[in-house]
Length: 119
Image 1 (cartoon, rainbow, N blue to C red):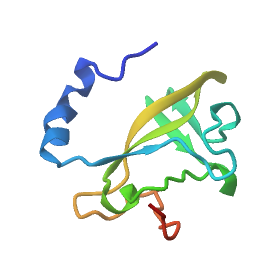
Image 2: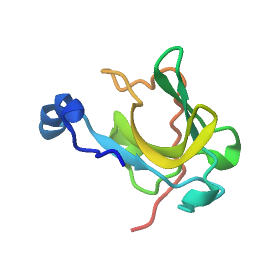
Image 3: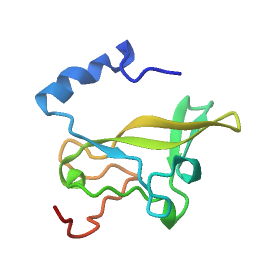
Image 4: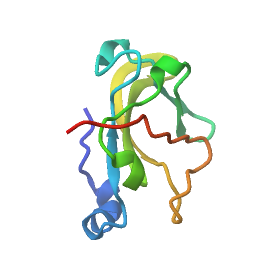
């Protein structure tokens, strides 16, 4: 198991403390709630680019959260089925930049308000 608080994450700590990085938590999916076993979002390792590629293949796999984090966040901890060399390694979290320095959505990210929230 990989720890989420390691030296490779150290470059983010001061930015989180200063508020430069504001995050949200993206586990819940429209069709599956927080049922990680049924989660459709995949995060596939591309060995050619040495990057992970996140895919929400259907409407039901869209990430939903009930807080106002969508308004203020520029990064997200996105959970998905981690696929490496064709093998599903289970659900893992990934830190993803979702907005640029001007709070505009980065390429490949769509952020929509899901409506009025109670409480």
